[in-house]
Length: 315
Image (cartoon, rainbow, N blue to C red; front, side):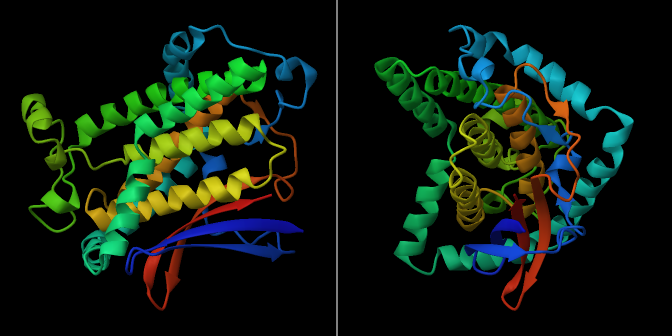
């Protein structure tokens, strides 16, 4: 029995919906892009339920000292031959979304302007994707960890801080290379790309250059990944966390800060850096049968209301 939690960001009206599907067909996601194809199939080699990992506590400086190593692991994880199919699939998905970016954003923006309630909700979810919110969450884990002498909470706080800076820096590097316009500042359909723009212009007119990939999505997904990896027994964390990431994405498009095609790479970056931070001893290649293993997938979606991307988690 496979349970799949789906969060679909529909391009028509910027609506994000969530549902739970139960299926006996292990091939249900075969036509999707799996994030696990971009991060080695994962085994819980350092599961939080194990005594050794359960008592593990980073030094106070590890949240910063480990960042260069995170970048190195990210590079070594991706620059290998077996990554090529997954990377190509990610490129195809992104290109397919770019083709419909102008129409999808205009529909979402009309929805955003349709009522004060829609604007307020969209702005709320956009704010939830800000890195400051994630650092605040790390602070909350730290306060609880110190007050309750809870090593797991302290470790989670350290890893959230680590991943916000490690992932955020990589996102900024890519943004400074791609130089894509936000929808709200687009001078042409689907936004102009200014490869390696003048850095003075970039910082003076950031919305003209910083759309791709989405840092809000990357850091939000990285934070969710760290939390669920540290608390695997809390089953509701994944569906709730992934739904919130989907709502953040819908809000970003509604508001005109991002195109839908900015999200696939952001999701992959967040997932990879989240796994790297949560597993400091390394990510092990799983020997679990693929049909039974947990999978996180990106699925192109089409409905009577439009098209979009489905984030699906099977467990």
